[in-house]
Amino acid sequence: MEKLTDKFIWKSLKEGDLNAFSVLFESYYPQLHSYGLKISNNVALTEDTLQDFFIYIYEHRENLSDLETIAPYLFTSYKRFLLRVMKKNQKLKHTDFSTETFVDIQFTAEELMTNQETERFKNKNISNLLNKLPKRQKEAIYLKYYSGLKAKEISEIMGINYQSVVNTLHKAIKSLKEEISIIKLFN
Image (cartoon, rainbow, N blue to C red):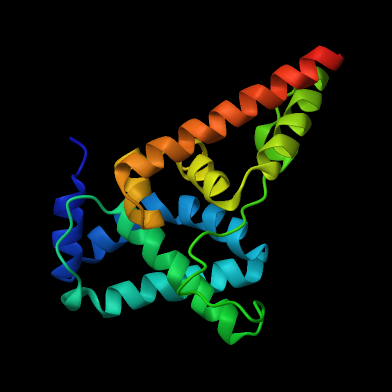
């Protein structure tokens, strides 16, 4: 059986196909869960809001726009959904979400780990370097390298144009390379 296209899955979901909903849920839940944890830093809140988000999508499926690719829509919508819930729960005080579009994602050494001790040391340093990046660069790096999204999809999620995503990723990688070069000089 060939892989179902995003367009077909979305169209079927809009028509009320529970199998399409199941495919959507199983395909995107892990990525959205990981992204939600980065935003909320709260497992229970992330899981609750993610389930509510998928229920909301199914209940409002008839009002959804047609899509060619699903990931940008889901990431953007879930981010907004989660931030609204967090604001409502008073978790984020004095935050104006209309101007604060970038979340402060924190990387952990565990996300970068392998079995070897030297790799763990390197990964801890890399996670420290990643966490020093500006919010916008961290979010772009996370979406590109940890969620496997393309620059076009990232531009939709972050609400910036394609070239800005490319430039942001380039600046982040350049900054990381410079920091790594400095560390190598002192080791």
